[in-house]
Image 1 (cartoon, rainbow, N blue to C red):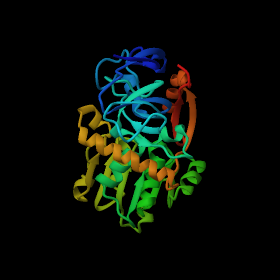
Image 2: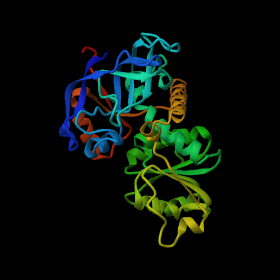
Image 3: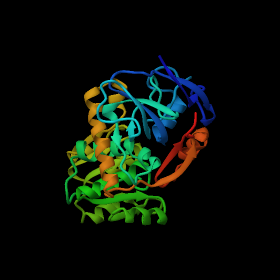
Image 4: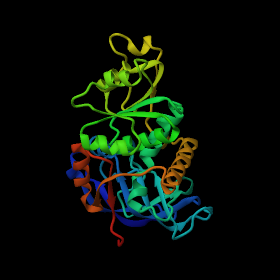
Length: 339
């Protein structure tokens, strides 16, 4: 059996123009532990633009529905579902890598164990913007780097989607936070989030600023969300035995073997791996992380900045905005209520 709904579908891999509205069939009724969710908002992440341009991890590009993050209302539940019921507001991170449909749609079928209840006072657009970036920040700073209170951490791109959540997570841990930004306005924004040192990378040497900030001792932790050149430069800002996390893949050490000589620990984080490889225990753990994220959001411990909200039909425009760069916060799509 299947359930039909409207969605943004890839015509093929390529530029934003390959995103077009179409009708898809969802496998509903599904497994006993699955839930049918009417989507009210879908987060847009850089990974979406990569899959659109290069093709998905699973299957062919044509017919793929992108989108990992979603928030909405439970429409129906499988026979074994006992934590949610129709009418409940939920958010989640699921799909968007090919194979099963992602969240650029009016409905989604999601395992119950991935759902997080959305508290009163949190709108769907905000809830949809949080799951992937919080999972990424948590896996990076808590699970890999083991960031501790009082430690100095550098988070690159602190005003961006992942960055502004990561700086708040680090602040809540009790760390001292530095970040790179591209303007005075973004420096002011991250300062309000608890950043101690904001470095304008257009005119300042972030390595020198971090070494000065740490009285020459270097940083205990750094999170790279930029790429190879920034990763290698960051190595020179680290304290001996420091921990560096990269979301962009490890390009190797510097010619001077900076990481080797300083005994640095290097971690890769790619939070889509559990979904791609079907690692259910890791996916269940990510569901727990999202539930923790929403609790923090509801308690006011963190906030989510929304750079822009587009209707579902304008997904191509949302991708253009994201690829142009320079955003403060997240981009979100909002499907119409009907259909």
